[in-house]
Amino acid sequence: MSGFGFEVQATMRECVPTSPALGRTGIITTPHGSIRTPAFIPVGTKATVKTVLPETVAELGAQAVLANAYHLYLQPGADIVEAAGGLGAFMNWPGPTFTDSGGFQVLSLGVGFKKVLAMDTEGRNVDDVVAEGKDRLALVDDDGVTFTSHLDGSRHRFTAEVSMQVQRALGADIIFAFDECTTLMNSREYQQLAMARTLAWAHRCIAEHRHLTKVNAHRPYQALFGVVQGAQYEDLRRQAAREIGALDFDGFGIGGAIEKERMGEIVGWVSQELPDDKPRHLLGIGEPRDFFTAIESGADTFDCVSPARVARNAALYSFDGRFNVTASANRRAFEPVDPACECYTCAHYTRAYLHHAFKAKESIASTLATIHNEHFIVSLVDRIRVSIEEGDYLAFRDDFLSRYPA
Image (cartoon, rainbow, N blue to C red; front, side, top):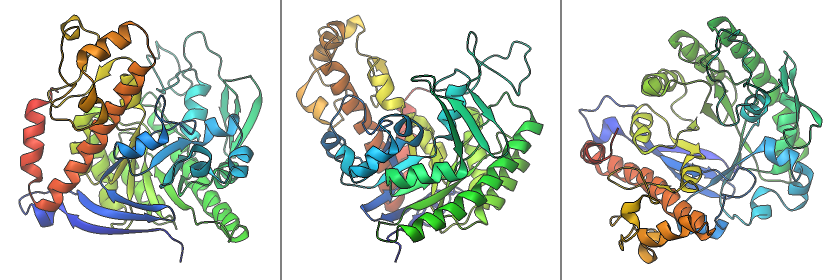
């Protein structure tokens, strides 16, 4: 027994006969517990969800967390995390864990764009975009990626095999195959080249994963997810999904360059081609309205740094939209962030207090805001799951979207 599995519980078509949607609910089983899907997975990039305790992340309702292989490889080092007993033990998180392959960070940080992959090319070669004033720190070839650490300038090499070795040492329950991330600025020809590399690396990831699983048979099984690329091109997305979907993966990540306005159709293309009996993780989606589109299109789990990142900048979610708590209107607002929210922050603190804490630059401001935002997103996706199972998804969706600004 591997300790990993996935079972579909209900589909939108079963619960809402008039719906053409691909959405479903399910249960992912891992060695460290189960995840009821759809589910939002908070991001703890460096083995921490910034500003909050792991215990708090559990209390706000999160079922799992995702950390980043690139960042943990550079600091403190995968060997240290392994010596601590793996990611969960290292960060005092008892539940399921994910690590992404590091491919996005290797390539995005390598061209100086941090959280995004490309900006305005200003006439430059769209397949060689680098942020203004930056040097290219990552060089891709058919074997892998050579990159310079954004921390200290040291040189490193990631290949499919290295990514698997790093993620094996980190010990997450669910890991991702190494892939080449692209941007919407890249040409169709380059997208095809990156797809071919990603497919070749997928085969190598599977081989290395099997080897590492065999020689570490005493350790809990790690599920390996393949990643589907193809940008905004339907034929490429479907081709990538068929090719990656035919391989011996435990589940799949939907990644790469996605135009937000077309997210639903792009995810739908991929979901139609991937096996129905394996989970689908949509990488980097975290805004409230997006979940409805993504879930209807067949995605099961999601991760994104956005809820915590915007919280640290005083932007808070409510059922009537996102707002900035430092606005003057909140200076004397002795009411919860959102009266309908049941998080710890809303139960004990007011908008006025958060306004004061941010203005005074007190660190508690980021903590309380992050607790609220993460709870808001986690519970929203939970409520979507329940609404599918109870057959009133369409009513819940329409009510939420009618109140939450586009």
